[in-house]
Image (tube, rainbow, N blue to C red; front, side, top):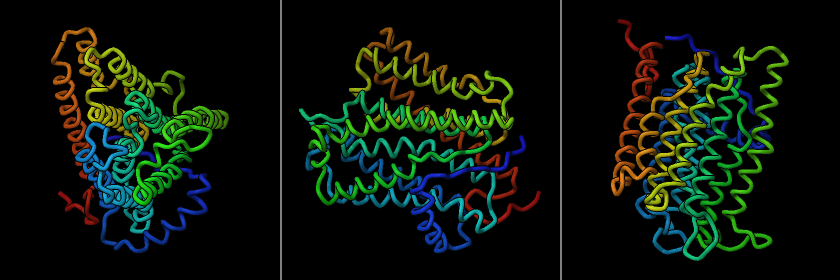
Length: 373
């Protein structure tokens, strides 16, 4: 197994540095020393997953917003689970250093689950502000666009680390988490109708959200990433020698979202309209699968693969769907592909976790050391 590179992260976000870090430093002291850091990470992810499944039950096709179909307690639980996941994700590293149990397994576990959690945060929030009938807001295509931009921003941060060796924590993370928790609390107190009324100058919350995400991506995230890479180039600390190797991690995500966009645009049965929640869930799983490979490469300082293997079956399904070869079976083929993709991704995560735990002689969810063979 390749030698893992020491974790190096920089956080310059004022909200994190001057507000949230003080809160996390207090909370981490409450955690018993016998609890493994990975258990904190996984518990936060499970809370997000439970919250997502609760919203699936009440709002499977994103049509319940603005009605009485979603009980008020769901929004209270969404606020609790989102804040808890945010807190646990923020203190797991502190707890690892506190217990002297930091490891490459913890880094992979944290960022690997983050790559999936990013889509779960987004898909859960869509249940709040998706468009009710005859009201402006998030259509299915706007949801796909927003999710794609958010996921690509996540990839941008790890592509930056792949080239510089430093993870510059994005400013948008803490702000988005605080806004999500505040949004759920506001929904629980005032009602979901607040998101379907114009805010300022006749613009609605979903439109403002989409515009802000696009603007922050173009004028903040991308320039900041390019500046950090250029600075590393000037200091001669770049990890990759050639432009080709530097750009390799972006090939699979670009192909992934290109194929997905083609499917959404040319699908004979309008698969995104017909199965919005399942399709967007599949997008999140596919992205996480691609992102995890990049994270492992940046951790081990190895060359990124140029073409992720999942793109082959995806390309075949998309080709068969848009050319009409699948006919009425397109929806069934999509469901089968989503199920197999999810199982394959979970299997990959379990296998990599086991290999790392055996290599490092530690348990994933326990502070105990493995017995030497």
